[in-house]
Length: 345
Ligand code: NAP
Image (cartoon, rainbow, N blue to C red):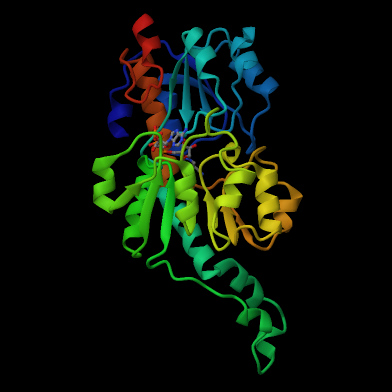
């Protein structure tokens, strides 16, 4: 970071709007190079406020949850924006096609949140297998340890060992592969599904490629979704897919809410079509359906894949670096996802 600050040349600063408070280090870097306006509230910004505050700015730094659809991008108040620097890796709420047509460069922050998200995913796999959340709840029930015999509910808490169980990964990119590395040390068998086979990575963790999703679902004890939210992956897991899964299987979604049909998930959990689920992401975040919250066989976390101080700090610095590359160094940021825009400018 010191490097980024000390080399700041005397420049006419561009206006940058940031839609959420960022870690101090990132803010310090950004304010050296930009006139920074930060949305001060700790919640997702409304579209109207985002547009009002973007007016007169050449850059905006967003969170993956901010909706940047066609209407927003084409709104006159967004007219001067030349770059959207996303603080996160998922770009599912951003209309990349419209942004590209408008010659707006888009960047994200891959890599620096990989371990944090893989840690969350694996902690959920462990929590499901050893039934940590249900056990914790039972322990707090007044009567259990006041009596001289165990609560019968405790007896029915049958746990599983991960050894020799099959982990099915839907998505085998940075995070999926990282989850697989963790699973290896627990003695799990790994299978994965993606559009492309990844032979090199698969060799490292002895993973087997499933060309079809069905093949993966039929054979997995734990199905972990870690692919992007795209039109192709929308409702990828629905009624038919739950029917294919083992009755003893667990589903873990730390990718995007749109990938799992939430109503069908609730129904599958209610009817014990699968044993349990652990969910970090939701269809209409931050809204979480009451029916899902009522269920005992699901663990719910509030989209905390990247929520470590280190990951958030590194994401902020990388998002700032992307902006500096473009506006100050006049080079195409490494993490531009529509590089063709840079070549046109
Ligand atoms: P990545 O390195 O780009 O990997 C994505 C994987 O998904 C690849 O294996 C890709 O393989 C596969 N994939 C893409 N489209 C697919 C499709 N239609 N069907 C099956 N597989 C498909 O991305 P990453 O860094 O691992 O991140 C994955 C996702 O995690 C992100 O997009 C983000 O939404 C989510 N995420 C969530 C959190 C959180 O807080 N919960 C934090 C970080 C990231 P092919 O291209 O060969 O299909």
